[in-house]
Image (cartoon, rainbow, N blue to C red; front, top):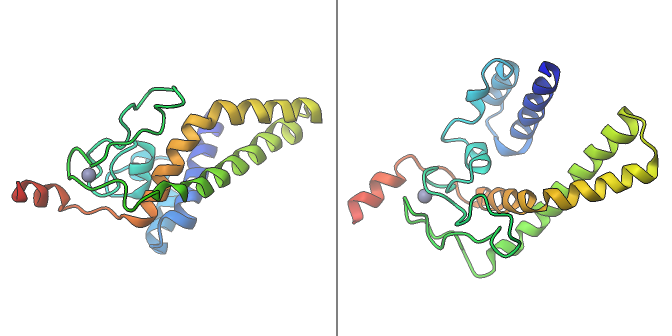
Length: 172
Ligand SMILES: [Zn+2]
């Protein structure tokens, strides 16, 4: 169990280290410390926080999705028009989230490879059942995949702004 947790934190660290955070030395230090301090990863102000907690990419306070826990296919990707906390317009431009499709595709491929490696290479399950399990996992992961893809996509364009909330309050 402990090894599994270590592995999960390590994978998160790699993701963070490679493409979510350009500050190399900081990320590297945290990569080493991550096993004991999981809170360092998911602290407010980092893109990974917004992605994993489904929060607004600018203020990290307001909710991103209207139906946070729903699995209904029509509701799962419904997002607020503006951030409830800082009023950031989530639809940066018309059909902004078409681009999230590429992210979703990347996530599915990564997941498929992970399932393949675990079931075929690690557990020795034969190819037919491996592909059946890949299909099943991909279907089950679709709602989460779509949500994460949208958040990753908007996080590529919008950065955390610590003053976003106070600015919003002063303009009201
Ligand atoms: Zn916000």
